[in-house]
Image (tube, rainbow, N blue to C red):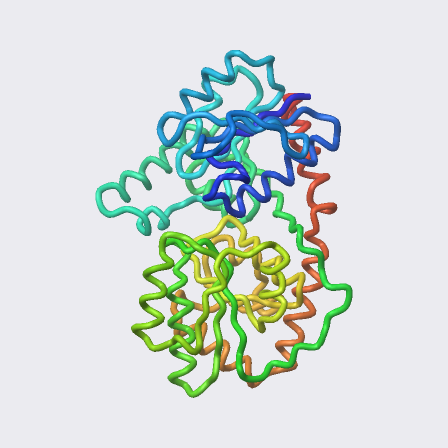
Length: 366
Protein backbone atom coordinates (compact mmCIF):
# COMPACT_ATOMS: atom_id res chain seq x y z
CA UNK A 1 0.00 0.00 0.00
CA UNK A 2 1.00 3.64 -0.47
CA UNK A 3 1.00 6.01 2.51
CA UNK A 4 1.49 9.80 2.47
CA UNK A 5 2.39 11.93 5.50
CA UNK A 6 1.70 15.67 5.29
CA UNK A 7 3.79 17.46 7.93
CA UNK A 8 5.08 21.05 7.92
CA UNK A 9 8.53 19.77 8.90
CA UNK A 10 10.64 16.72 8.22
CA UNK A 11 13.52 15.35 10.34
CA UNK A 12 16.15 17.43 8.49
CA UNK A 13 14.35 20.71 9.04
CA UNK A 14 16.34 22.90 11.50
CA UNK A 15 13.14 23.36 13.52
CA UNK A 16 12.30 19.64 13.68
CA UNK A 17 11.43 18.28 17.10
CA UNK A 18 9.81 15.37 18.86
CA UNK A 19 6.86 15.25 16.47
CA UNK A 20 9.19 14.58 13.55
CA UNK A 21 11.17 11.99 15.53
CA UNK A 22 8.10 9.89 16.29
CA UNK A 23 6.61 10.37 12.81
CA UNK A 24 9.84 9.02 11.34
CA UNK A 25 9.52 5.90 13.50
CA UNK A 26 5.99 5.19 12.24
CA UNK A 27 6.87 5.77 8.59
CA UNK A 28 10.02 3.64 8.85
CA UNK A 29 7.92 0.83 10.33
CA UNK A 30 5.53 0.98 7.38
CA UNK A 31 8.49 0.68 5.01
CA UNK A 32 9.68 -2.38 6.94
CA UNK A 33 6.23 -3.88 6.45
CA UNK A 34 6.69 -3.60 2.69
CA UNK A 35 4.64 -0.46 2.09
CA UNK A 36 5.59 2.67 0.16
CA UNK A 37 5.89 5.65 2.50
CA UNK A 38 6.12 9.27 1.31
CA UNK A 39 6.49 12.43 3.41
CA UNK A 40 5.60 15.90 2.04
CA UNK A 41 6.94 18.87 4.03
CA UNK A 42 7.80 22.55 3.75
CA UNK A 43 10.93 23.56 1.91
CA UNK A 44 13.80 25.15 3.87
CA UNK A 45 17.16 26.70 2.88
CA UNK A 46 19.60 24.11 1.57
CA UNK A 47 17.02 21.33 1.39
CA UNK A 48 16.72 18.94 -1.54
CA UNK A 49 13.45 18.99 -3.41
CA UNK A 50 13.25 15.19 -3.17
CA UNK A 51 15.34 12.49 -1.52
CA UNK A 52 15.06 8.99 -0.08
CA UNK A 53 16.14 8.24 3.48
CA UNK A 54 15.48 5.04 5.46
CA UNK A 55 13.32 3.91 2.56
CA UNK A 56 11.03 6.94 2.90
CA UNK A 57 10.63 9.37 0.01
CA UNK A 58 10.80 12.96 1.25
CA UNK A 59 9.32 15.67 -0.96
CA UNK A 60 9.53 19.36 -0.10
CA UNK A 61 7.77 22.36 -1.54
CA UNK A 62 6.62 25.81 -0.50
CA UNK A 63 6.89 27.58 2.81
CA UNK A 64 4.38 28.90 5.31
CA UNK A 65 1.14 29.59 3.51
CA UNK A 66 2.32 28.13 0.19
CA UNK A 67 3.07 24.51 0.96
CA UNK A 68 -0.59 23.42 0.83
CA UNK A 69 -0.85 24.70 -2.73
CA UNK A 70 2.47 23.04 -3.62
CA UNK A 71 1.31 19.78 -2.03
CA UNK A 72 -1.90 19.77 -4.06
CA UNK A 73 -0.03 20.44 -7.32
CA UNK A 74 2.46 17.67 -6.58
CA UNK A 75 -0.24 15.25 -5.40
CA UNK A 76 -2.25 15.53 -8.63
CA UNK A 77 0.72 14.14 -10.57
CA UNK A 78 1.12 11.08 -8.29
CA UNK A 79 -0.33 7.56 -8.46
CA UNK A 80 -3.19 7.06 -6.00
CA UNK A 81 -2.33 6.76 -2.31
CA UNK A 82 -4.18 4.33 -0.06
CA UNK A 83 -4.00 6.61 2.98
CA UNK A 84 -3.11 10.26 3.52
CA UNK A 85 -2.20 11.41 7.04
CA UNK A 86 -2.93 15.10 7.60
CA UNK A 87 -0.68 16.09 10.53
CA UNK A 88 -1.90 19.23 12.30
CA UNK A 89 0.46 21.70 13.92
CA UNK A 90 -2.00 24.47 14.67
CA UNK A 91 -3.06 24.65 11.02
CA UNK A 92 -4.06 21.56 9.00
CA UNK A 93 -3.51 20.65 5.34
CA UNK A 94 -7.26 20.31 4.58
CA UNK A 95 -6.38 17.03 2.84
CA UNK A 96 -9.81 15.35 3.23
CA UNK A 97 -11.15 17.87 0.71
CA UNK A 98 -8.53 17.30 -1.99
CA UNK A 99 -6.79 13.93 -1.52
CA UNK A 100 -9.70 11.82 -2.94
CA UNK A 101 -8.73 8.78 -0.83
CA UNK A 102 -8.84 7.57 2.77
CA UNK A 103 -7.56 10.20 5.18
CA UNK A 104 -6.85 10.49 8.91
CA UNK A 105 -5.79 13.45 11.02
CA UNK A 106 -2.70 13.14 13.21
CA UNK A 107 -2.34 15.61 16.07
CA UNK A 108 0.05 15.70 19.02
CA UNK A 109 -1.66 18.36 21.11
CA UNK A 110 -4.49 20.83 21.01
CA UNK A 111 -2.51 24.06 21.18
CA UNK A 112 -4.99 26.10 23.21
CA UNK A 113 -2.87 28.34 25.51
CA UNK A 114 0.22 27.89 23.33
CA UNK A 115 -1.26 30.48 20.93
CA UNK A 116 -0.84 33.04 23.74
CA UNK A 117 2.88 32.22 24.07
CA UNK A 118 3.64 33.15 20.46
CA UNK A 119 1.07 35.83 19.57
CA UNK A 120 -0.62 38.83 21.11
CA UNK A 121 -4.25 39.82 20.77
CA UNK A 122 -5.99 39.60 18.35
CA UNK A 123 -3.83 36.96 16.63
CA UNK A 124 -3.83 34.66 19.67
CA UNK A 125 -7.63 34.75 19.87
CA UNK A 126 -7.87 34.20 16.13
CA UNK A 127 -5.55 31.20 16.41
CA UNK A 128 -7.60 29.59 19.19
CA UNK A 129 -10.82 30.21 17.28
CA UNK A 130 -9.31 28.77 14.08
CA UNK A 131 -8.18 25.65 15.93
CA UNK A 132 -11.64 25.00 17.40
CA UNK A 133 -13.25 25.66 14.01
CA UNK A 134 -10.80 23.29 12.30
CA UNK A 135 -11.53 20.47 14.73
CA UNK A 136 -15.25 20.97 14.20
CA UNK A 137 -14.69 20.91 10.43
CA UNK A 138 -12.74 17.63 10.77
CA UNK A 139 -15.29 15.98 13.08
CA UNK A 140 -16.06 13.32 10.47
CA UNK A 141 -12.35 12.39 10.05
CA UNK A 142 -10.68 9.74 12.25
CA UNK A 143 -8.03 11.27 14.52
CA UNK A 144 -4.82 9.70 15.82
CA UNK A 145 -3.02 11.11 18.87
CA UNK A 146 -0.44 9.99 21.48
CA UNK A 147 -2.23 10.90 24.72
CA UNK A 148 -5.52 10.67 26.58
CA UNK A 149 -5.22 14.39 27.35
CA UNK A 150 -5.34 15.25 23.65
CA UNK A 151 -8.21 12.83 23.08
CA UNK A 152 -10.23 14.61 25.80
CA UNK A 153 -9.39 18.02 24.33
CA UNK A 154 -10.49 16.87 20.86
CA UNK A 155 -13.72 15.45 22.25
CA UNK A 156 -14.34 18.85 23.86
CA UNK A 157 -13.96 20.41 20.39
CA UNK A 158 -16.55 18.05 18.90
CA UNK A 159 -14.32 15.32 17.42
CA UNK A 160 -15.93 11.91 18.14
CA UNK A 161 -13.41 9.42 16.69
CA UNK A 162 -9.95 9.60 18.31
CA UNK A 163 -7.52 6.66 18.59
CA UNK A 164 -4.67 6.87 21.10
CA UNK A 165 -1.26 5.27 20.54
CA UNK A 166 1.44 6.43 23.01
CA UNK A 167 4.77 7.43 21.54
CA UNK A 168 7.68 5.05 21.77
CA UNK A 169 11.29 6.01 22.42
CA UNK A 170 14.59 5.20 20.74
CA UNK A 171 16.43 5.45 24.07
CA UNK A 172 17.39 1.99 25.24
CA UNK A 173 16.65 1.40 28.95
CA UNK A 174 19.65 0.76 31.17
CA UNK A 175 20.43 -2.94 31.52
CA UNK A 176 20.46 -2.49 35.27
CA UNK A 177 19.40 0.45 37.38
CA UNK A 178 22.65 1.98 38.59
CA UNK A 179 23.02 3.71 41.94
CA UNK A 180 22.26 7.45 42.01
CA UNK A 181 22.16 8.74 45.59
CA UNK A 182 19.88 11.74 46.08
CA UNK A 183 22.31 14.17 47.67
CA UNK A 184 23.45 17.76 47.08
CA UNK A 185 24.21 19.18 44.67
CA UNK A 186 20.79 18.36 43.23
CA UNK A 187 21.38 17.79 39.52
CA UNK A 188 18.55 18.97 37.25
CA UNK A 189 18.27 18.90 33.47
CA UNK A 190 15.81 20.36 31.00
CA UNK A 191 15.80 19.08 27.42
CA UNK A 192 13.83 21.33 25.15
CA UNK A 193 13.65 23.60 22.16
CA UNK A 194 14.15 27.04 23.72
CA UNK A 195 10.81 28.50 22.67
CA UNK A 196 8.26 30.62 24.57
CA UNK A 197 5.79 27.76 25.10
CA UNK A 198 8.46 25.62 26.81
CA UNK A 199 8.83 28.14 29.68
CA UNK A 200 12.43 27.22 30.43
CA UNK A 201 12.65 30.46 32.41
CA UNK A 202 10.50 28.68 35.01
CA UNK A 203 13.26 26.09 35.43
CA UNK A 204 15.67 28.95 36.15
CA UNK A 205 13.28 30.19 38.83
CA UNK A 206 13.23 26.71 40.37
CA UNK A 207 17.00 26.87 40.83
CA UNK A 208 16.71 30.36 42.27
CA UNK A 209 14.03 29.29 44.74
CA UNK A 210 16.10 26.31 45.87
CA UNK A 211 19.12 28.55 46.36
CA UNK A 212 17.00 30.93 48.43
CA UNK A 213 16.10 27.93 50.63
CA UNK A 214 19.78 27.13 51.10
CA UNK A 215 19.80 24.11 48.78
CA UNK A 216 22.52 23.58 46.19
CA UNK A 217 20.97 22.78 42.80
CA UNK A 218 22.58 22.76 39.35
CA UNK A 219 20.65 22.97 36.09
CA UNK A 220 21.83 21.87 32.63
CA UNK A 221 19.84 23.27 29.71
CA UNK A 222 20.02 21.03 26.64
CA UNK A 223 18.77 22.54 23.40
CA UNK A 224 18.71 25.81 21.54
CA UNK A 225 16.16 28.16 20.07
CA UNK A 226 14.90 31.71 19.79
CA UNK A 227 14.74 32.20 23.57
CA UNK A 228 18.38 31.33 24.29
CA UNK A 229 19.66 34.91 24.40
CA UNK A 230 16.83 35.93 26.74
CA UNK A 231 17.50 32.95 29.02
CA UNK A 232 21.21 33.74 29.18
CA UNK A 233 20.37 37.33 30.07
CA UNK A 234 18.16 36.16 32.92
CA UNK A 235 20.83 33.79 34.24
CA UNK A 236 23.22 36.73 34.47
CA UNK A 237 20.58 39.07 35.92
CA UNK A 238 19.54 36.58 38.59
CA UNK A 239 23.20 35.72 39.37
CA UNK A 240 22.76 32.03 38.53
CA UNK A 241 25.94 31.66 36.46
CA UNK A 242 27.46 29.17 38.90
CA UNK A 243 24.27 27.12 39.03
CA UNK A 244 22.96 27.08 35.44
CA UNK A 245 24.85 26.02 32.33
CA UNK A 246 23.85 25.77 28.67
CA UNK A 247 24.83 22.56 26.89
CA UNK A 248 23.42 23.67 23.53
CA UNK A 249 22.13 21.20 20.94
CA UNK A 250 23.64 17.76 21.53
CA UNK A 251 23.85 14.44 19.74
CA UNK A 252 21.54 11.72 21.02
CA UNK A 253 24.40 10.03 22.88
CA UNK A 254 25.46 13.31 24.53
CA UNK A 255 21.87 14.15 25.43
CA UNK A 256 21.43 10.74 27.02
CA UNK A 257 24.56 11.26 29.12
CA UNK A 258 23.13 14.51 30.46
CA UNK A 259 19.78 12.92 31.32
CA UNK A 260 21.43 9.88 32.89
CA UNK A 261 23.59 12.03 35.17
CA UNK A 262 20.68 14.16 36.43
CA UNK A 263 18.58 13.44 39.49
CA UNK A 264 15.47 14.88 37.82
CA UNK A 265 14.28 16.05 34.43
CA UNK A 266 12.40 19.34 34.90
CA UNK A 267 9.57 20.00 32.43
CA UNK A 268 7.67 23.30 32.69
CA UNK A 269 6.00 23.46 29.28
CA UNK A 270 2.62 25.11 28.70
CA UNK A 271 1.33 21.92 27.09
CA UNK A 272 2.69 18.85 25.34
CA UNK A 273 1.34 16.15 23.10
CA UNK A 274 3.10 13.54 25.21
CA UNK A 275 6.45 14.65 26.62
CA UNK A 276 8.83 12.35 24.77
CA UNK A 277 11.93 13.33 26.72
CA UNK A 278 10.21 12.31 29.97
CA UNK A 279 10.21 8.67 28.86
CA UNK A 280 13.73 9.01 27.44
CA UNK A 281 14.95 10.19 30.84
CA UNK A 282 12.96 7.46 32.60
CA UNK A 283 14.71 4.80 30.50
CA UNK A 284 18.00 6.10 31.92
CA UNK A 285 16.87 5.94 35.53
CA UNK A 286 15.89 9.62 35.81
CA UNK A 287 12.35 10.53 36.92
CA UNK A 288 10.71 13.81 35.96
CA UNK A 289 9.10 16.64 37.88
CA UNK A 290 6.49 18.29 35.66
CA UNK A 291 3.69 20.80 35.53
CA UNK A 292 0.08 19.49 35.65
CA UNK A 293 -0.60 20.12 31.95
CA UNK A 294 -1.89 18.05 29.05
CA UNK A 295 0.65 15.53 27.81
CA UNK A 296 2.93 15.72 30.82
CA UNK A 297 0.23 14.18 33.02
CA UNK A 298 0.23 11.27 30.55
CA UNK A 299 3.97 10.70 30.28
CA UNK A 300 4.45 10.98 34.07
CA UNK A 301 2.30 8.91 36.41
CA UNK A 302 2.05 11.05 39.57
CA UNK A 303 3.36 9.40 42.69
CA UNK A 304 4.66 6.44 40.70
CA UNK A 305 7.10 7.40 37.93
CA UNK A 306 7.71 11.00 38.97
CA UNK A 307 6.22 14.16 40.40
CA UNK A 308 3.29 16.10 38.94
CA UNK A 309 3.04 19.28 41.02
CA UNK A 310 -0.32 20.76 41.97
CA UNK A 311 0.14 24.11 40.21
CA UNK A 312 2.11 25.63 37.35
CA UNK A 313 4.67 27.54 39.39
CA UNK A 314 8.43 27.31 40.00
CA UNK A 315 7.66 27.51 43.71
CA UNK A 316 5.62 24.30 43.51
CA UNK A 317 8.46 22.42 41.81
CA UNK A 318 11.08 23.80 44.21
CA UNK A 319 9.01 22.73 47.20
CA UNK A 320 8.42 19.27 45.73
CA UNK A 321 12.16 18.81 45.20
CA UNK A 322 12.91 20.11 48.70
CA UNK A 323 10.52 17.51 50.13
CA UNK A 324 12.00 14.80 47.93
CA UNK A 325 15.48 15.39 49.33
CA UNK A 326 14.08 14.20 52.66
CA UNK A 327 12.73 10.96 51.13
CA UNK A 328 15.53 9.08 49.35
CA UNK A 329 13.55 5.81 49.50
CA UNK A 330 10.64 7.43 47.66
CA UNK A 331 13.05 8.78 45.08
CA UNK A 332 14.36 5.25 44.45
CA UNK A 333 10.78 4.06 44.04
CA UNK A 334 10.18 6.72 41.39
CA UNK A 335 13.39 5.76 39.59
CA UNK A 336 12.54 2.07 39.46
CA UNK A 337 8.92 2.56 38.40
CA UNK A 338 9.92 5.04 35.69
CA UNK A 339 12.63 2.71 34.39
CA UNK A 340 10.26 -0.27 34.28
CA UNK A 341 7.54 1.72 32.49
CA UNK A 342 10.01 2.96 29.88
CA UNK A 343 10.64 -0.66 28.93
CA UNK A 344 6.97 -1.00 27.94
CA UNK A 345 7.22 2.07 25.69
CA UNK A 346 9.98 0.85 23.40
CA UNK A 347 9.15 1.16 19.72
CA UNK A 348 9.02 -2.60 19.14
CA UNK A 349 6.00 -2.69 21.48
CA UNK A 350 4.35 0.56 20.38
CA UNK A 351 4.60 0.27 16.59
CA UNK A 352 2.69 -2.94 15.77
CA UNK A 353 -0.78 -1.87 17.01
CA UNK A 354 -0.37 1.62 15.52
CA UNK A 355 0.71 0.25 12.13
CA UNK A 356 -2.13 -2.29 12.19
CA UNK A 357 -4.52 0.64 12.70
CA UNK A 358 -2.99 2.61 9.82
CA UNK A 359 -3.33 -0.39 7.52
CA UNK A 360 -6.99 -0.77 8.50
CA UNK A 361 -7.58 2.91 7.75
CA UNK A 362 -5.90 2.48 4.35
CA UNK A 363 -8.35 -0.30 3.59
CA UNK A 364 -11.24 1.92 4.66
CA UNK A 365 -11.84 0.06 7.90
CA UNK A 366 -13.36 1.54 11.07
